[in-house]
Length: 249
Image (cartoon, rainbow, N blue to C red; front, top):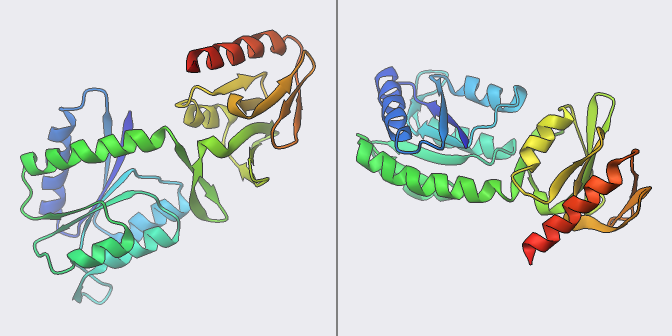
């Protein structure tokens, strides 16, 4: 499991220390790959999330960082609010030398509030909980961009995905269509953590849970749509469908 981690702290010494501690904690999780990106500037972090499709799983934020005029203020809390406004579902962990703003952390759905100085033991114990939550959530949701916002999409509600030229159309159970400028392979990698998602030919990803009926020519889905099968696809799809439901039983 790859875990994207953003660290944001204007104090380089603290930033480097947190990075070292996280890297050390990462050795406790051989099945996880910690990808750590450091930011000394809050604007850079916000730009990366909003404009560059950067989707960190964890964001460690120092609460007290100087603002644009150099004043000492809880800028980290404001950054957290902006991350939520643009749709980031990252788990937020505040770093501070004071408990003064602990209650405010609940307003932005923070996952934790750590008092400096950090120790490896304290940080690793928190990571146990955070990684477990990430692993469980990844079985149910993916993050996608829509209208300059990052949205959390329930995999249970994804009916199917269709490739149309360089764009992918994701059809949801409620009739919503999400258009993504990603490859079909990328979307399949995101969805395939749930075994009900299968490839059908070179143009479709289908959620087996939403199939109403099928034959050698077509698949009828529970949102009223029909997929016409490419030659030779039916036999493989039928076997995957039966294997999936037999496995559930």
